Image 1 (cartoon, rainbow over the protein chains, first blue to last red):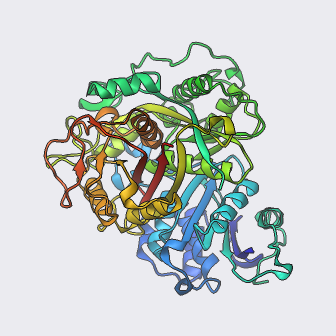
Image 2 (image 1 turned 90 degrees about the horizontal axis):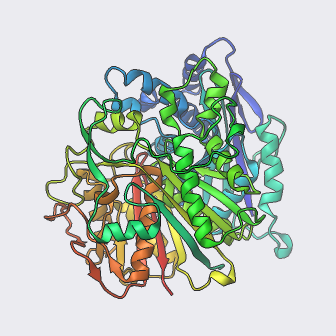
Length: 217
Length: 389
């Protein structure tokens, strides 16, 4: 059976890991808040400062999601993949690039005008080489997310899938990421639990900030 | 495993409005890439494959008054392109788009990005919704009466292949029986200036895999592929398998070794029950940048595919971004049906360190299995395998 091993939500100036509030900074603006999350968790990654806000948000959420919850050495690089979704694609940076391009277009800004660049940043950080795909949806579609990731795990395309929602535009933002792992332990009675029914409701709950279930709780 | 068949398809490009018209132009060696003078897009002339600026792709505007923004009252150029392509594919396939077991999947990188220059950003909420890809997908779904909410894939230059793969998986899961997969992108100042800033645009016609290659041409177009598991389509070309990987190396430069694209190819072949020797021809990404083509040559060589005939279609279409994977897959499906591999327009002299068997003239041969590859920004790679029965 596939299981949600951990979750991380960054929204409303707060960071929650597995449903528990782990950091809060009510006073900073968005860039300031992202920086204070980076500093609070003692992260040290110079590339962070080159990223656009969307990549920073997704990257931070993955760092906190995986911290103490994931043993990279247990998995092959090609077996770890990333499935992300959001509503506004890279519009936050598109608008900045569009303004800057009136003078001299900047390649370092242009590269962030694709939402899947965030997947690239996460893969570079952790050397994940499995499937990465980005979907655009007006709202977080937990059903599609669960079916898609569940399908990848069931078909042995991946053993581990990191994914969920990372959306950011102007000062509005939300990241809700899940660590989903394929478990090979036999389930009692030989019947595996239907991942998509159980997990969809659970994932929706966690997404809304209600108490959900992860293996670590 | 459920078999997934191609029911029908369409390519809408500056070269033609149907798949047949496109293939026939390509077989004659025609290219959509021309010198363009359009100061709204670029102060300097540039080479690209563009539609006539006045081309509206469709004559009716029915249903468009309910756009999310309320005010524009009509489909954008990007949406009209998508609708026109989907319409031809569903009509030629005799598809009822109100079928509850059907899903629409849309593939694009930048969709309505050209609205950034035209819309009043004062109405921020309307604007951000109108420019969003999900709005375009909803409008297309609404136009055709699709019952299920559409899915949008936006994963840089592998979007088209990722969308086909998503459709194949949806059908295999049993949730849907038919998937209509449509991809489109237009060329805007936004995208052109970005690639120019990378110095990635060729000053002339692009030359994939050639010694003198010097960058890409951009192109506009749409492609639609209809897939189904239904028995009545079982004589058609089968989508066998596909795979996606990430380089985990650099955002805008491809892998130095090609190992990750090779992993995608290996997984796709294994998933289709094939080995390298079963591949009859390859439709490569072949953007004609120094680094992409070099990486692809390495990946194909690592995959033991260096002697298999390979082409790049970028010389005909330019790089159509979110449509490229679809358009190039659809042309390759025609190649399978006609036993005819198209040449790589623009290629003259081997310009990659690991030499490939680049197709330089029309190649007539019995063809059964085709491999399609793509790679893009963010380090993504994709491979798709399809087969004639």
